[in-house]
Figure 1 (cartoon, one colour):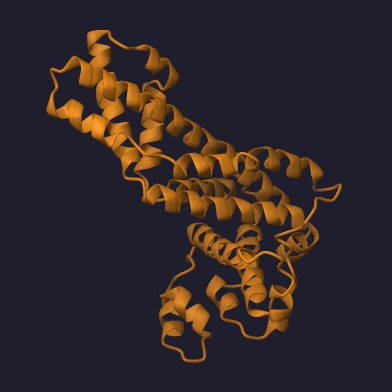
Figure 2 (cartoon, one colour):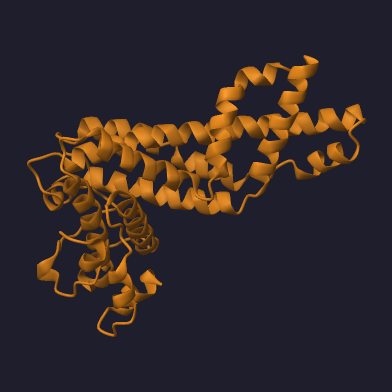
Length: 295
């Protein structure tokens, strides 16, 4: 199919995939059902994960008080008791990212397997394509909320410092059974990322390609570029947008398009952004919405 951006800047619908992908109502066929159930068991928890992150307040004041008065045992206990429930919540978020990684790889396996082309898979297996889109939509929403929550890293850093001190003093070690040193290291790497969920999905996609050496790389990159192109076509085609019954479906399509472009950029040897990008940024014939996306 060529570079992703060549697909996105194509103005002739006959040259690219042109079908309606029902992000609102697609239901699994019998052939999709097994994978759909597996992925659905993960996605059904996504709203609670987002709600938990959105309501995350942090223990900033308690930590500051404890740091300012290190000899005040009451303040130390107060900070520790405030941080521990938050760390347990952060562990839930991290554990969900591992489940999401497995779900994504299952979907990629189904949507890229021969002999069907990416377009055939996405058009025929719309329930799985919808789940793929929902994972991307969730990922961008999660990372947006995480970037607004600097307390997460502050709380976790305090937890790690305190657990090390407690280990030396043989004090309050019960919490370490919940989040031991190995788990804390993995969680620390996860939350150090500006966009941890997107990093997880990017790594999962890259690993999928490297672990399936008999599967042509083009099967994966074409699947991603086709999804991006389908979203673009639906956003630009009034006959398609008129089928949306919810106002937020347009935003959903935009987020999905951004998500697949980023995944494509990670797995394609030339990436999604190269000299072609600069050329089309300055080309008046390139559609305005595409030039805006490339900036």
